[in-house]
Length: 299
View 1 (cartoon, helix red, strand yellow):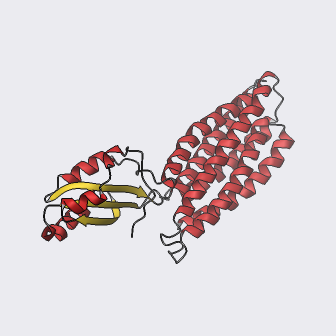
View 2 (cartoon, rainbow, N blue to C red):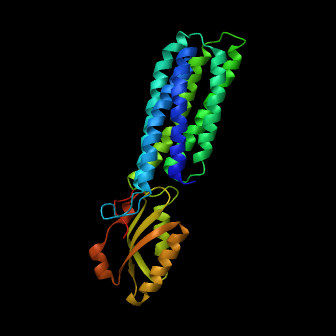
View 3 (spheres, rainbow, N blue to C red):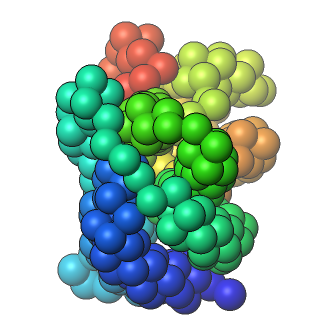
């Protein structure tokens, strides 16, 4: 199953359940359920937009988007993360006051709702968990967290069958929301860095530059741009100075092989045959930090 289909299925599953959950939360009088239903309705909107953007991202490159549409998938991941963070903050603010004044809950109704919720979220998580895109990664994380959250709600409902500790309801909402927030922020930052053409995660640009300079016949590395379009496919632009022009093909092959070991699929190489022409184009790439990259794109 491709990413587009799995995300659309997850969308319809969550849309159906969010509506049922919102109605049930009001009937059973649970702030935890109501809070999660609002959170889920926001997620449904995000998942729907993500599914649309994922569909667009599968298009081939054209005259308008010469590098393809892969960034649309990344845009979906950022949007989903933002909605997750905003929803979590709103739930936290809402439930702080309810800790002081807890309200009774229909624990039996919440228990059955929790069982249904766990089933749906596990199914949705299974649909997208094998996906490799950032979009699917964030959605899979969300479904997994929802499953854990609802397992906690089920436990709360069981405890309330024997006690009147209604403070557990808003307390549980706070714990779940804070947990989601701590997971969503790093995912959001990771997707945002890719969107801003940062050096791909796990790649040390200084080490790559040093390895390139150790290659036979390479005098110096003038320019080195490393980035990824979607977190999966890595791109590189390399500008080097060679000792002799006759070594150009050998050096290009060596550079491509080295960068292939770093999992770079698309590599553009520019070569200067002497120091005079090299100095004309010289840039101080030593000043580039590991977290920096420029908006150059491969040919």
